[in-house]
Length: 212
Image (cartoon, rainbow, N blue to C red; front, side):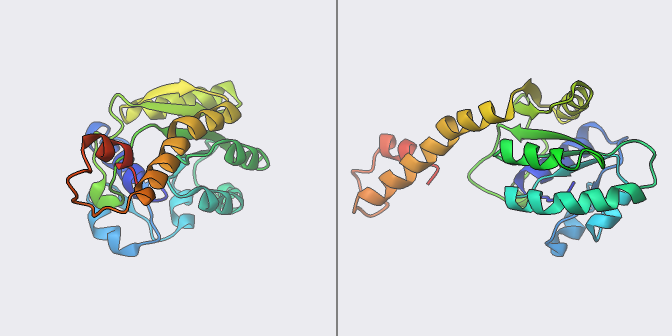
């Protein structure tokens, strides 16, 4: 696991609770998380250390970081101890640019884009929990049927419900169902010149602006 925030941390916790026989490794740019994360996974001090021991690498980091890490993964993959082909997955909100970028490195690793339809108002390792993905849909974007099956199995291991989708269709849908509500929430929150605790800010207002 690369990135142990809300999504990555929840995957680590779910594997530890429900699939303890699977050896899980984790790394994060915030090294102060090592003691806490280390109770649920083997902490790695670098990406190279993690990749060298892994058959599956999940990138639970922002999309720009996912794109930046792909060439590094391609460079590190041949030095792995395992003879199994490396499977790389991500959990980013956008899928088309990530899937397209990963295709350029198809000689070094297999790739499946994942988007867990789960989250909350709070982020980071402290907000993560083993049940976050339980019975939640997880979109799977993979061009190869074998890779798609492997990714679907990973989703099931952490309690999610895999759902196959084309990457571009996914991004159009997410723009409507996730992007648009966020835009409207932030716009509405900025329109009213009322204090946060004003009596006129009723339940409808709270629901509309919750994500802001």
